[in-house]
Length: 310
Image 1 (spheres, rainbow, N blue to C red):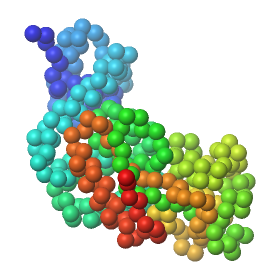
Image 2 (image 1 turned 180 degrees about the vertical axis):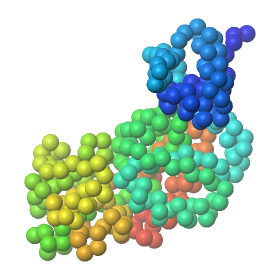
Image 3 (image 1 turned 90 degrees about the vertical axis):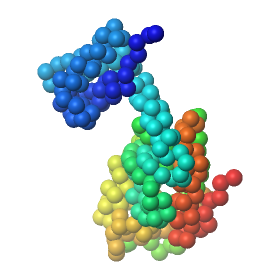
Image 4 (image 1 turned 30 degrees about the horizontal axis):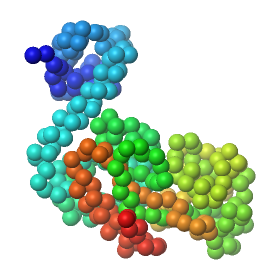
């Protein structure tokens, strides 16, 4: 029978590739550096190839080592699911679930829905990671996340998706802005030379521009920020206007007395929010329950009706 790598050896390799340091990798794996080094050496001997380049300051994967580590993440994810299937498969929303969420949803959605979810499912252990959409999809593919909350439309390939909410955008502007007298704002009213947007990689900007039928290259943005917080600070300082999602309207980001919010008078919904996961993920029923719990919590506080997926 062919000798195969152990899961422990694969854990060592993944930790070293991610941390690029023997001491940190050993600490993550709860072993000594000598034990970790011996495990990596056994793995390299078994495969008959060098997987890591060792320098004085850090450890780097060889091209083959990087490929093996990517496969190892997937294998470790499958092994983890086997354990969870036996432990938590019989109870709804119980045990750990690694949830990703994008920055333009997480700060506004999670504080609303988590208390009721934890009350309804006390055995659930949500491990939350915030990142941009593309990186969350990569982590789903690697098996280091179980599911993610994204804004749609967004291409997710072969992943399963379940929409549970929809909303429109609002325009945030300084209180003394000339447009402050209007109740609603249409695209022609928006002065493109003072429009501030999120930088590339944030889908909120794409969705907002799409709602206004504007192309990013023609939007004439005067400032591109890394977060909504930065953009809203600029708005509060009178430097321009920006788009915000409806669910952010009552957040602490809105500087009282400095920022006004006006509805964007363009046909909606401007974006939909949903949960995505791998087709092979064994907790599909839990995904449906999680999405339903979020929808039910959001519904009483919404400005409009909840989105009902078909």
